Every structure is written in structure tokens, then in C-alpha cells.
Image 1 (cartoon, rainbow, N blue to C red):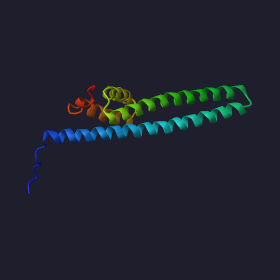
Image 2: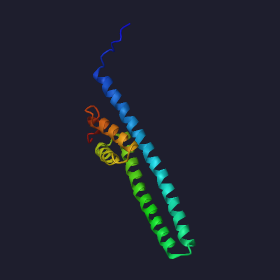
Image 3: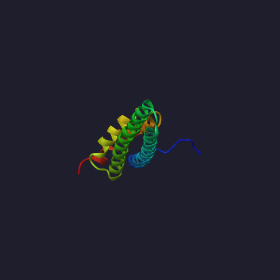
Image 4: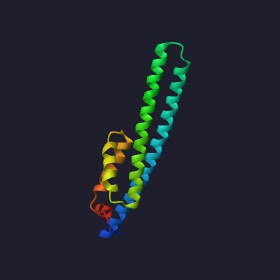
Length: 141
């Protein structure tokens, strides 16, 4: 038996990239769900800070709790928008919508800064979405 692998046909490469595209969409949906979990946690922490502010006896504690609550709620709002954008891009990738590839690349460009998992997902997304066998799937119809 030989250790030499049989050469891949061009159709095999296109099928492999189609699988990578499906995996990328699934990873993006999963990441959006995890981001939504962080949104819920941030809202709960913000509510906890609000309850501390209501019960605080002194003014500095009340102010610090209010600022903390505001930061948690602002973080939750930004992350909710991010989770929504990521989910919309993932669903559009699954449907091969014409605008999905560029939107997913924009999401991937921002994901680079979410170390370490976002960076890895971003690099994988860029590799898949920039591949020559994937580009034709997203041409406007």
C-alpha cells in the first residue's frame, strides 16, 4: 500500500469549501448565542448594581452603583447589537445571500479584537470567505 494520496479533483475542493462555509455559518450562530448569554449576564449584573444603588445609605455608594449599572447596561446593549449582526450574517451565509459574504467579512474584521476565540473565528472566516471557490456562491442573483 502506498502513502501517496490520490489527487483531488476540482469538484472535491469546491465540495470541501462548501462544508467549510456550512461550518462557518454554524460557528457564527453559536457565537451569537454565546454573546446573547453574555448580554443576559450583563443585564442581571446591571440590575444587581441598581438594587445596590437603591439600598445604599451614602451618596458615594449610590453614585458608584449607578455608574456601574449604566456601564453594564451599555455593554449589554452593544453586545446585543453585535449578537444580532452576527446572527443575521450567519443566517445569510446559510442562504448564500448576495450581501452575506461582505457582511460576514465585516463581522470577522471586528472579531479580530475579541481575543482569543474571536480572533481564531475571524481568521477562519476570512480564509473561508476569501477562498476563490466560495466567492461565486455569493454573486447577486
